[in-house]
Image 1 (tube, chains in turn purple, yellow):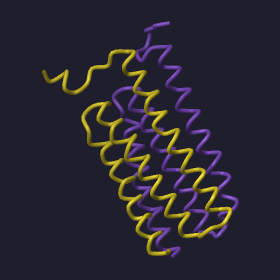
Image 2 (cartoon, chains in turn cyan, brown):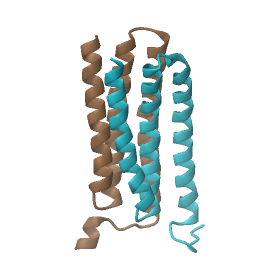
Image 3 (spheres, chains in turn yellow, cyan):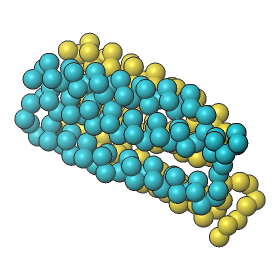
Image 4 (tube, one colour):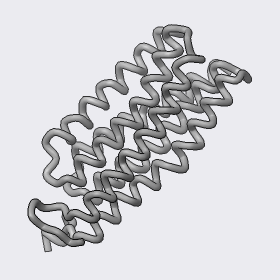
Length: 94
Length: 99
């Protein structure tokens, strides 16, 4: 069963790398925010899988809860910031 | 119970991976948001439900289900906030550019 968790974590890690490509080369700021949100969601799954692999799930669950909170608040903060500031450099919508 | 857990984890990983593929293959931000928002929510829910099934009825599985409920509420909210930024700033979609 730990082998299944390892393979699962490896597949999700490949998906994180694909999303990281979108974050690095995204044409607009919105694409980068979407990529960061996707990476955060996948990281929760990876943290829980690591907890099952090391058989320490009680510790890693709390880290996963914290990460879910930080991911949500970070995405909301970024979108609020760019909603007010404008997506292009020098633009100020107010 | 273990068979159900393996099936749920497999489907969850499938949806998470397809969400990432859609994120890199689709042409504009609307379709990317479509792939990222929905595939991520469903994949995370299935994967976390599979992990909760694997450990049975314990405190850990209840906490995992609470995380799944939190993701189910917050991931569409975050996608909605991002989409509202694009709407406010009049970003053109792929269809409008090709007309």
